[in-house]
Image (cartoon, rainbow, N blue to C red; front, side):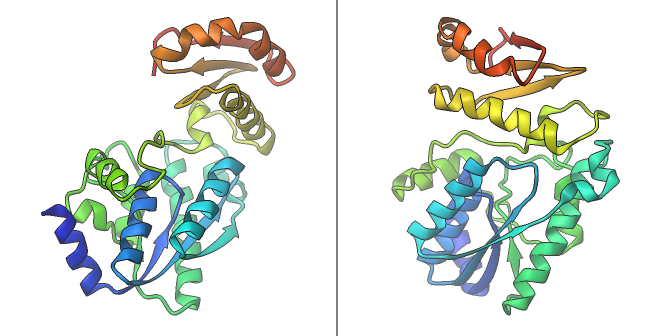
Length: 251
């Protein structure tokens, strides 16, 4: 029934721009819009908060779907409200991204902008959702009651390789509130997480521990493997951080 509601949304909105991240939700929304024969274009705003791998995944998936993708760079750290990493960081960052998305979409003739927010996303935990509502971004998956489990199932049924992709949050969430966000620090976290991904770990986080430490968070099932690769991990992390720990409470 909920999938039918999504089909009805596309009938009413047959020309849409999609704020695209390459994650499970926005990827399914992109696929579903294309399958519904919508006139659809995807927009990816690259800030300092996403690793290159996420952009590469987004480019690859959009190409497989046959959807045109616009990639545009945004220096989110120009805004001190974002760079200072205070309580309103996520909201302020989202406002900049949405404004850029609307600018690009409207220049291409689109008057409807959608994103992949789903029915499980809690506004209390995601300050950026307030900006979506304020700036007229539609969230079809949420409006149709599609939760993350539904989207993963539908993605698997459609043969999408994103169906089991771990959820991802921006690199800024690895840094404690109040700690200045810099290109250098974000780059260290990106490189550290990339090392672990290359070693075969997944669904992970590398949290910054001031003043110069890092805490690795992995699923319980991967903790023993991390201990087995302790020397390799230390060798890779030592040029980046002065102290390295492994969180024994799994993600």
